[in-house]
Length: 502
Image (tube, rainbow, N blue to C red; front, top):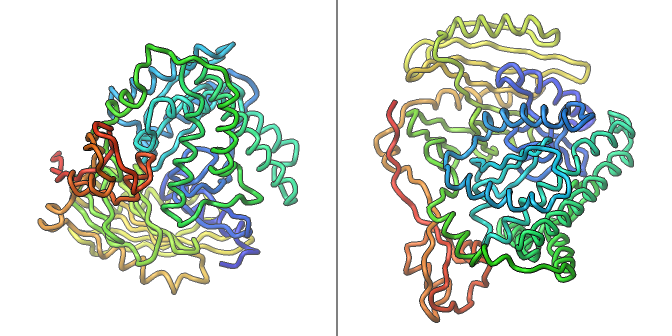
């Protein structure tokens, strides 16, 4: 990608994505100044890989406006990520949240707490007191103290209206943030907010009778997870909006030692209570949403498979499944279009929509043969001052729905990527019986250690599909440590998935 044109070109691809996906993809930047295209999976302020994202934000001028915006954004979270359909887990998180709220001196919002169906350990707060905890975070936490500190952190974000404060600073600095020093100021301000939320979370947790050290130990788990995934902890960068996990673990440990608190006896054993609640939770991708096997995506309930280009970064959300080229200069993705329209009618509706987009035009419209019947393909071109993006949009029937394949790339790379996009489209077909039988899910299971055994020995004994390092990380213990008898340990077990039939 040519970096001097990257922002303008990405704006063009966002226009194409807005038409084909129903919402703009976001651009994700690093300190190098490069930009890439992503299919947005993460909640506001941070992308899936932890990079800061740029998006148009609503104006937050009052607490009432916070609540309105939060309600609207919650509907988007439900559509794009999904609220976990588990009444007991949602009640568990809500119960902790309500305990923590008693420590707030003033409650400006009617707080809501939800578990989102997200693999990554993540938590976020929307304006107006809407708090979300991912199932991945629940699985990583080792006790209720850690979870309470994280929820308290998010409550602090909402209570102190950090989204509105950040927005005000951006407005003060200038909406375009042209100067690097201005962008750095906003990033530094974001880091200060995170530190403030950590402190607020620890204070709320301590007031409710939880150990404020839980914030430090959880950040330590995040740090160790980074090391396991990437070989080293992530180093701080100039434009980071969050302090590193290592820094937060150290600072929060020191602060916890200075906070006076008394354990709430009603909480009981916070390790046992937490593990009891998360025993059986799905970890990793849930089969009912489709799974990747290398570059091939398999969806058992909808009975299709599709192979994305080798080496591309794959993504799967409730809205779409897709992949992007290594440098982000091309994307290809698939999403359900409708249960009512035929391919030609869908293409005509798409053309009508593009007529309202001055910089987007249809250069070709034609019928095509597709697996399972007749389809329709459009060639789309979007031009702006910075350059041009081309896209192939194909509508095809499968099962009881109409589907839409989209491949988009920078125009000067179109010949390079068009063949890969067409190969992806042509790979779309029903699952084989062998593929369907091979699909498995993974659930967390809590087992008791035997006296004197190591994590490695426990893994061998319990049919644990996690590696020894993964098991050690998930339980906050060293791999060669000898376990005491009766200790509760988290492991992972696979189970065969039975597809749901309409």
